[in-house]
Image: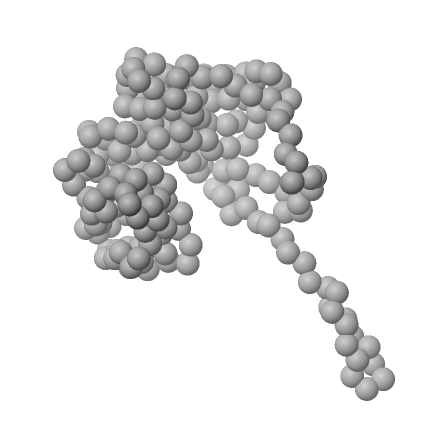
Length: 219
């Protein structure tokens, strides 16, 4: 609270910080704008075990369902999971469905009825999976839309894709992208800058994406 006086009149204003969640507008993760609990001592609630010995590579919350990816050593092992987290205290948390894309997945996010998974494959790097029915996810029965970009080993590692058309089969790359000369492990975008976490000697790179048709590496 900030207070001040002008003449015989007293004034005050109350300032507050609100943590928002824009992903919820697209049907993604939901959270309260008010922080609660002891963030200095997080508690372990429920858990879930997956078949990959390397553990999970990504997680995205969509309502009461968590979508988990993994990059197992065998293509036959499942790498995409839908987990019921409506009761976070369950041990283990129930797996609603799981299947193998056969590519190995490195990350996932959700928006609307789709999950967007990054694949560790020279053939495909982006898989779009219909999650409208999380209890029946399957490479054959659920519509799994795969967009070919380019091989990490032979092409550019950073791409911007126009997803304004709701049909993923009509998506197009907006520009030439650029070569990072390293695997890109994670991307965070803020204020027209894309922060790339890479596996190179420069672990964080920054790209100016204000013009999607001409992204440039600035740091």
